[in-house]
Length: 154
Image (cartoon, rainbow, N blue to C red):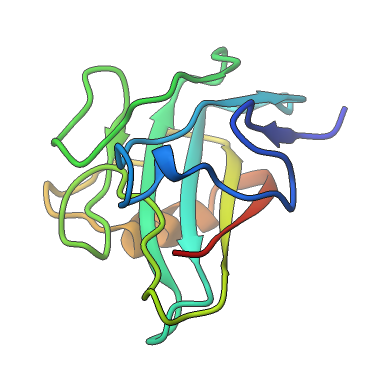
């Protein structure tokens, strides 16, 4: 079975609702997944904007998600550590999810939500670990990954 990632808030190639952006509640959308490969010990879910003016902008890295979970409920935000998962510091310099927020003069940006199945938990992690560091640590232990791309324009 192949690893898949979806959201009930938007379709692949669709538009991200304002609710999940800086112009709305600025909280994460709901996600679900299937096809977790054998040997998975943890999951990583990231959100990146490769269309940002200065290069890829990292909005979120949620990691050490239990592999038996079938998804994440909506509502993770920039308010520190969540009690059930770990979150890195994003490029807004806060821990947790910060939604799409491209400059108002820009064309629509594509946001890449990437789910990675990992062969172990990401450890040890410093308190100030950012999204780039978490993704770097995960690369060496990644079993499989999948991506869901959606768009937003202000």
